[in-house]
Figure 1 (spheres, helix red, strand yellow):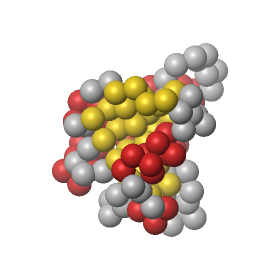
Figure 2 (figure 1 turned 180 degrees about the horizontal axis):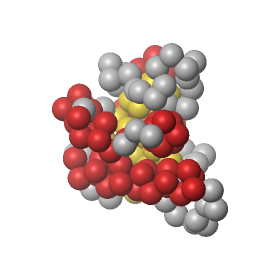
Figure 3 (figure 1 turned 45 degrees about the horizontal axis):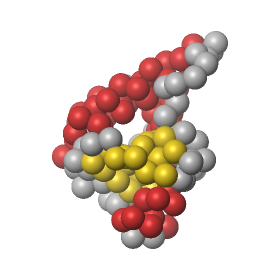
Figure 4 (figure 1 turned 180 degrees about the vertical axis):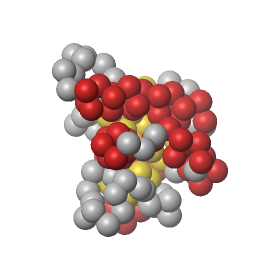
Length: 130
């Protein structure tokens, strides 16, 4: 597993496409949905983009996103997971947004422990964390 995280619009997807030769058809975007699979991810995709949005959908549905990760850790072992780091900055006033922020943090910790590589992208520049 490869975890790529960083702020919104910092170049994570471009970096992943260039570095790992990803095509658009190999990427499941968790931010785009038609309601028929929400919240879930396509475990057949090579990469999962906007994983933080999957976590938000889980929070709104009362589902523990980290438990989903634990249950599917083997299926995720060969994935490239991209997530916005929403755990820093101003703490949201809204209860659901605070819960989302906390759950994203727990998920990133779990993914980071299980990932072979962890990369933070900031201003389009990759920084290898692990």
